[in-house]
Length: 88
Image (cartoon, rainbow, N blue to C red; front, side, top):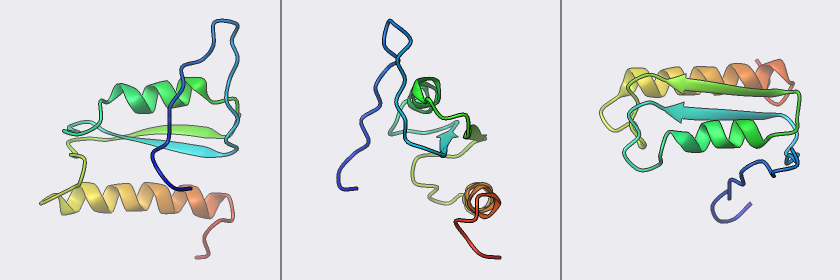
């Protein structure tokens, strides 16, 4: 995929988008993307296999935040391993 992910809102008739298994990461102190984006993506997903996870205190680029970055990597890697997308 090239370019940004466009996050549609659910349609008035309840229509959803199907991206397959999806994890939406929200950084609670994000200074570049509104926190509502992850929640909107999650709400718009048709998949039953979806997860919304908040990384407390994380900014958009995790600059100077090794603990939050390690947390995000662990959450995503665990999610991927559970679905067979990542070995180990």
